Length: 421
Image (tube, rainbow, N blue to C red; front, side, top):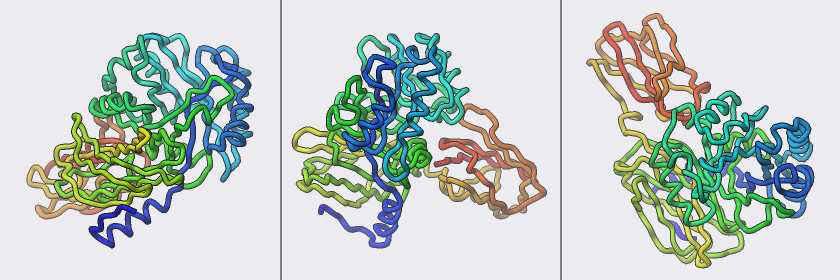
């Protein structure tokens, strides 16, 4: 095992975080006879579970094929539910929006379908998709010939960004599209899927989508996809985990010249790794090292001050690659004490998950109103207070992303960035 020791306490905390999740292998893109494939969804789920022996299968038949048949959509959802056995296998129902000019998108966790009439209207499709509450979307097969790759991954809005959590990274040539999406501001994580159109659901090849979830259940898998705890692997037995300053891959972390990264790689077939790289924004490699082990567990310091995101790319001697989820980097001031208008206010933790604590310091500032806006300027929270100097605010209703918080006090206003993991 390849390991560099820095802090025993830190390593214990990292591995406790890692231990709370189980790793599962899935395929989030497949078809049946409902859209150019073979069999029916129940065949697909049974094959994936009992023959391919993967943990998760999403059947994502083409939208234009199933939209006009309520039977097929209902059959898909019922088959997914019947095939899901907690602790053993999860079946998922989804659909694939296909555009010959824009490219394709998979949608999961929806109650209904979007309109197939928006085939060449990207904005209309996105508007339609927003009406599917709690939907999770995936950019499919970037680089598809004849398409403009979603207008070259032009960023849309924070609301749309919060729906798109995944991007297929199936081969090395997809790496550049992964980086382009991240550089353009999308908060997506890598998956690897087979796009099956034959009796091969889950074993068409050795590619897998890795998923870190608490349990093998539908809700837990959806939670993992929503929180971007995924990875792409060309080897069916390989897996990767990464943390930065204790923050899990898929989440957010403040920039620092002395960031501590932990990388865990494993291949249960004992195939070795020969290169591990930390890829960063703007085509930068923060670190790269050679190894000759099947198991890697290393911790060291890196400088993330000039980075907007990082991910791990690892390679085996047979040219099988693996990509981790990113960690998104936010300005250091967003997690430190900030001040403006001569008002000192502490907001912690930041990045946050379910709550933040807000405390005023000095100048007799007392809080009388808090407003939170997303990065588009849309107000998502506002509440008045009676001259508080400290309070706890529940943030569990906020989706992961970047927000701006304005705190009005008795002596002026205070503004800061708020990051929700």
